[in-house]
Image: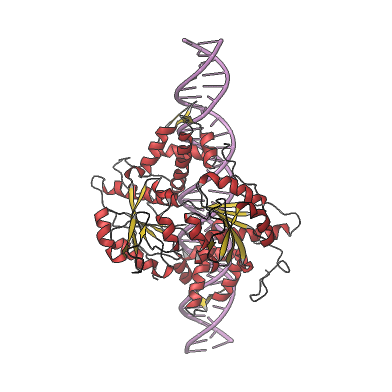
Length: 246
Length: 246
DNA sequence: CGCGATTTGTGCACGCCTTCACAAGCGCCT
DNA sequence: AGGCGCTTGTGAAGGCGTGCACAAATCGCG
């Protein structure tokens, strides 16, 4: 297989035409592995075993090995994985070596926080533009950026080559914003507004609904409560415990 | 997703079907159905077909029917589902009829936004306490609540019967906060801090990592870019659904 | 009252993902 | 050099979830 050298030149289409076909479940875990690897690198570790990395990422070691095997053979039997090499590989696969430009639409309560979220910049994303439809908010400066009117979206998205958009508006306007983003050439959308977005098939959408997460937890609370209320109900103390050390 | 596992096959041979055993995938979709149902109820619909509700929730109709069948038979053949009855059923299953108390730890950039997020209150959750370790933040009023010091957590959690905690602190302190929440009797945690939390097996954890979502989108951008650079590009599986026409 | 139109509930097959278990490969020590 | 212990990479099995296709059930209408 062809592998990429790490270094200043990111692997652009020069030598790697084939894109590995990764299972969706694997892709969703790669960022977690990457975070764990960065943490390991900071502690000075040069290599890590699948067992160690799996514990740091909170997954099964067999799963981790299978995930990584899809990227190619980057480990050494009897030794483990080279931390910095693996970091470069995963970052290349995820396309994080491009320092991608992101725009954010909706500078309300949540959008304000997202605009200043340090976790984005520290992981390869630059928020380059903020938009809102409210004239009272246009002109406001947040974290070094000036809020612009949504009508400017198409022009600025083209200028800055923005491919990823974040929607943090009220649910009623989310679909209209999505349409505008698509029209402006955005091909990936992260949506924080409740509801289903209709987009062309070439556009990827990921949804984060904060209330849904709480509702799922609420279900488990309900379930746990009904278990302890059972007649002769044991409090399920016989479960095996495996807590990862940190 | 989450690092929690749930009952494989509990041997409660007593046959008390007080609580149906739902597949995890179904549980994750129930909140979406609920939101769609509320929307339908507002428009005055009394019944809805599986096809209609599935479209509004962005899923396959067969999947929706199978999901709902796990709750019991609440539809009428030839007619559809009674909207308000189904709302009540799902809210009961999710435990949303309890108006659950939630506390939030970490009133930084993100925590600030979460404390004022209207989507929580409108869906059955009351944020009843805010905590932070920074003395400069203690005493600040946000959305009618006063930020309290984290040392007060155990006392207040007991007073208010808080079972759900939200962590919005920097990653370095997340584990310590989780430990404190568990010690205070919290049994469900929604974690916005990157990293893996170690908790006892009876505590449920769900993680939301905003940067991970962007990284997954970044991967798809990378994939799409490498496909268009190739002849005969195949459109890989893209999950898009037509939404409700309104 | 009976029939057809409509829609639910579900058996079944298929595919994806997870997990186990182990052979193959690598380094180190003697 | 040779053996030994450790770790990766992977074949195989099992479980879970999805989607199809259809029988069963209900309503409306003639």
